[in-house]
Length: 194
Ligand code: AP5
Ligand code: MG
Image 1 (tube, rainbow, N blue to C red):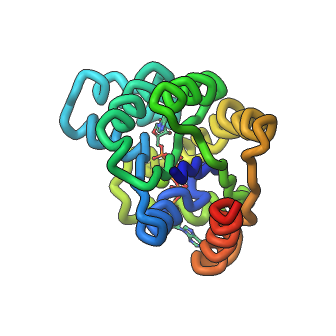
Image 2: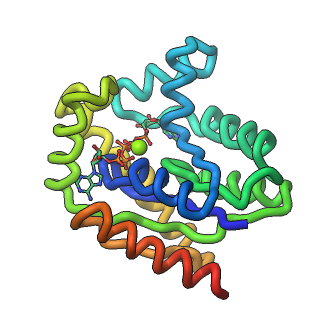
């Protein structure tokens, strides 16, 4: 299986490149952010709890993110060539527990692709997207900045977890979407040819 963790700060292009990866390599896209936004719309217990954090640009509890991923793996594992994990794992606790979830299902993360984008470009992209996204956490520049700060403090350390496993690959995420996606595909094809 090809299991890609697509990593990067808010606005780095995780969602954009997930969609392309999914169609090029026939994978299943699992975005914890998208799943949580659906849960909020449906007003499930988890959605109501997560909304308190998401609306402020904070992380939802690890327990909720892990439950979502466990349920999705049970639903789709064995029916797909692999997964693109978009926005998960986001803490080292999630990363360690994720390894257990994957191992219990006889699979593993293949690689982490980390999209590296400069701060000013992240702000520009998110402010532009805010005009049409309808996302509450795009609605205010202070929430956008808080999301980036939360990434730097709580999520960035997850890179070290995958570096230690020899699964970490950095992608320069500035430039056009086509240019960046080509670099991503080059890495994926190298991994697949091993
Ligand atoms: P999530 O939905 O994952 O949001 P995020 O990490 O803030 O990232 P975004 O979706 O804003 O950006 P992206 O990297 O997907 O970029 P995109 O491709 O859209 O999480 C939201 C919240 O949910 C979190 O804050 C947290 O509360 C909660 N949550 C989610 N997962 C969790 C977890 N595991 N644990 C705990 N809590 C969790 O691109 C951005 C924009 O830029 C788009 O408009 C795009 O068109 C444009 N763009 C993309 N690439 C380029 C380019 N190369 N040039 C110009 N524009 C570009
Ligand atoms: Mg996204």
